Length: 85
Image (cartoon, rainbow, N blue to C red; front, side, top):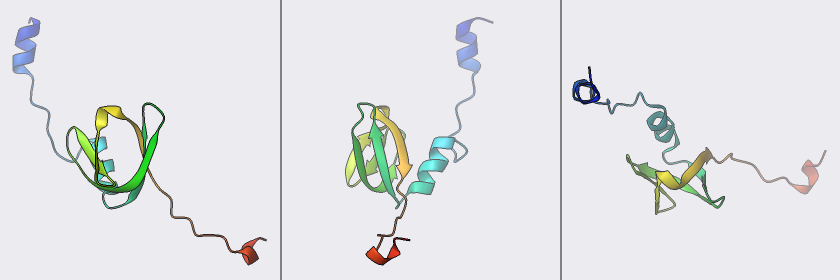
């Protein structure tokens, strides 16, 4: 079987929620995230949507190929002066 026959007989990739990227991004929708880019810069904001090529954070469309990491921001409470223990 040559390469062309293999390509023609290949099954299409399913687009369901089974993929890791889709599951993780769905879990982060409407949550505050920090996006770190390949150049080291970062952006924080609410993840409001995504598609096959991009994500939307803080009303900014970001291309996935430029993203190194997306991490959910932890919810920290502010420490009061009398909480020092």
